[in-house]
Length: 622
Image 1: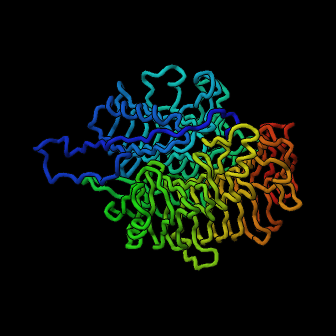
Image 2 (image 1 turned 120 degrees about the vertical axis):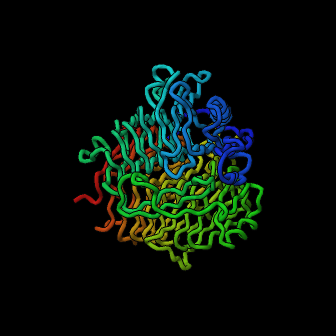
Image 3 (image 1 turned 120 degrees about the horizontal axis):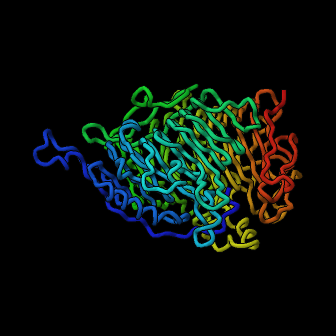
């Protein structure tokens, strides 16, 4: 949620940092035994690789400068990844204390999270949007950053009393924490050290071992396949799946926890690592069913390793026809950080192909293209990629399988989308009929934020007239359309689309945590009508569906442009025994009304109860 934000993003300078690498072999000197280690692949100028032999002060200075460039660059074009070779960084006396800005990935290059240790912190603080950086301090727009595959021994040496109380990770959507081992201090998902209101609206953690965690003001969160030392509070919609130490949910909605003992289907995100000989590989974890806890506790995460030589390492200057030729030859695709203009689809046609983005690599549609088109074949994995609409309408931004074609994915080797994000508007005018269209069966969507921009750099977004202009100019009918059967979503965040935000027509679908904000900007009720029905539900399961399950769902309303607008239902589903909703809610954010939670059940979320959710524990009721 971003209703407190008043500052608009601005286009930033491109971040150009040279590749920094000091391998253990190069620091050993001429007397080092054995053949020299291979150098790193050429990941281009926006990937920085640190070695534990580098002075802590040099690493700190590089990361401080990066944060200064990116901390306010919400709608900019810079993308960067900071990768750490195996080893330890920071000391008790001189900890490494990192802050992470927009479009920044921080990751370890070990085979296990314990192979890379940070003695210090890796943090995100509130942005303070008024009073010269002293007031209106929130995390509501802290998007697009990644932290993964390392250990943090929390060391606050040199920080003041409040800052020394935890490792702060005050973020909202499109921010993931994966494969982390945090010890020695607490983790806080809100920044309580700045002036108020300190709101946050995240988020996602997977495959991590965490200490006592302060949820604070986080309105919704999914923690999947992890271990937690404790969880402080729930706010609106806190969901745990396959997490050891998760709170019990027997008291729902007081507190509003949703806890699944196991995760029905999971696959961890692929990760880049360096082996003992200095060779680079991508580890592709195997799919797991009914899983619980971390994947790396007993050793290497089960799966397969692909040497980097089997990848085409792409840069934004590479034409799509070159990328497609490499994919057709059987190579995988690694997208280095940057913004790629895509005028024809990148076509992923071969089973088990991996498409991995570093540093929030971004594909932008040109001339109405579908930037990424994935065939319905087994085992394709797309991870770490952002897909943007362009000013000419695209039928879709990412299409998985053909709606009327053969889709041959399998339950044991599902197509998987991990940390794949979508934008329609924001950095520029955007138009798309649908952002994510899933036609194939047996697909796993593991954390996505699908966003029609409620704010951005466009001049037409300012003021009431600007909001009306945005409704006509930044157009997106649906965020997610699922036509395939046996599709599972763990962490589905979809916001601000102009009809149904999510439409599910496939059978045997499962969603674990759904978060939605209805669009802020319909000009009139007539613009927000589904035939004779007032408004479009935030989550729609087609009337022909006979089996569907949702655990932990929320639909929020903030009709900023016209507070008199009504939406009849937050959720609409067929009334049949095989369609079950567990722990769903609606909430009013100060403007507009949702009359019912689901199918006429549940009272109104209206301006008389701002910020007070309306809950339905289960639907249909017993």
